[in-house]
Amino acid sequence: MPDFIDVPALPLAARADSHVTGWRDGEAVTHAQFIQETAGWRQLLLRRPGMRFALYLQDTISFAAALFGAWQAGKTIYLPSDTLAETCKALALEVDGFIGEFDAALQPLQPSSAPAVADKAGTPQPLDGDAPALVVYTSGSTGTAQAIPKKLSQLSTEVATLEALFGAQAGAADIVSTVSHQHIYGLLFKVLWPLAAGRAIHARSAFFPEDLAAIAPQRPWLLLSSPAHLKRLPDSPVRPDVSRLQAIFSSGGPLLPDVAAATQQLLGHRPIEIYGSSETGGIAWRQPQELAGTARDDSWRPMRRVEVRLNSEHDCLEVRSPHLPDDHWLRMADRVEFTSEQNPAQGFYLRGRADRIVKLEEKRISLDQIERLLLASPLTAEVRVLVHQELPSSSSSSSRRERIAAFVVPTDAGRAVLEQQGKLALNTQLRAVLADAIESVALPRLWRYLDALPANTQGKTTVAALTALLEQTPAKAAATVSTSRPRWPEQTVLQRDDRSVVLQLHVPPDLLYFDGHFPEAPILPGVVQVDWALALGRQYFDLPAHFRALQALKFQRVVTPGATLTLELENDTQKNLLAFRLHSAGGQHASGRILFGEAT
Image (cartoon, rainbow, N blue to C red; front, side, top):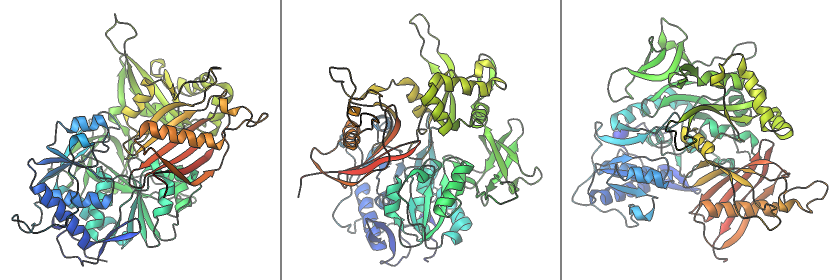
């Protein structure tokens, strides 16, 4: 395996020209090719005025080349998690230009097809560790996303920490990821660490289980993932080849014990969980094991050179770390309990967030406590709770009314109550779970039942995504026929970015297409499911006009009247295809790929 190289020396330090930097569609990308692509970006950006550029490229190897080319040109890179209109509107106020897959109206810079040549700027030198290299954004999981600047030395130190902790276990494994490199976890684990250690990067991300099965190499490999992605794997009929899998990393939130156990059973490895934030970088890690006759140890171990202590006034964690911009102690919003008060370095338990203590009608309310109580019910699999500010109900009132909203993914038992007795019955049963422990003012007044919590490309559930579920009214996707029999499901957006969308669909019991298919046991025809995927794909993406073919079309479970489904759509612009997956709490219903373009 190649020697480890500090990030400021990348990618200039000696690697053999034939060294494999990564893999793209089964083809090796060599170090020589990567250096040439990086040089092209450097020369392009040296000719551009301004210091601040937003970067978005889905191909991880192309992204890495643009990133290092920009750094060599002395630019600061801003990393958005998507290229949605509102994101770009905010970015335009902060940056001097755009790089990569942004709307043409923003005039984004594109890679040059011509080979890089020597120019008067001379050979690039190792990067300055004090350079203002990067601006990343918090996930927005507890509010509005904030911009976080990073010096190159912070990133370099953290990469060295990862190699010291996990390098021996990783060996020479390829890097396969279900998460995006457009945020700090993906950037560190998927780009900077493998480049520094000489591990091959897979250019394509495996956002869906089918992608992971297709990408998994016949060489040693590591999987980088998140709780949102790992919990979907057991429901997929497609299984990746895990015979050469070395380890699994997960970040973005603690893994539920049953998800961790299911992942180990399915993939053969217990995930290594990483705890940190965009601001702090990595803080701690854990790999809880289920051992017969012993209690599960859920404590977190601080990373090398990361100091932790308790802020006794707030019961919150404080951190001092070389991953931070200075050597001051930073107070987190996470409440903790140390395994040893005398020696905090031994580890700690997370006990919820202090910023989730809210005041409602002069009462202090713990949103974490509400979630814990609801999760203890056999009717719930996942729960998120927030305070929702409703608009005033009349023009004479200027104040906003605050109410607790609960977002629940039911278990099979909860789903049965919902389908057989209705939403009011399930509301009543779950409110009864809280009644003895929670004051009446804190009981949820708004309830939303979902197949899955909305998650962004980081695998995190944001306040904005949850609030959107309260503020939008599910609409029919198209007009009904003259008999008022609906042809389309009601839809709610659970997750959306420029490449993918996840929708919750409610199939009306009186849907027109149930007629005659079949009279005594109506089911939704497969052709209708494909038609919905195509129509909704056109609604959310700019798809080519000509349909060409269907690939890998599978129907695993029937869809019955009144079903609640989740439809995942992924638009691959490079391959001119739309991948779809239709599933519910009962499992996978249908999947396939729709190809576009003129017939050949």
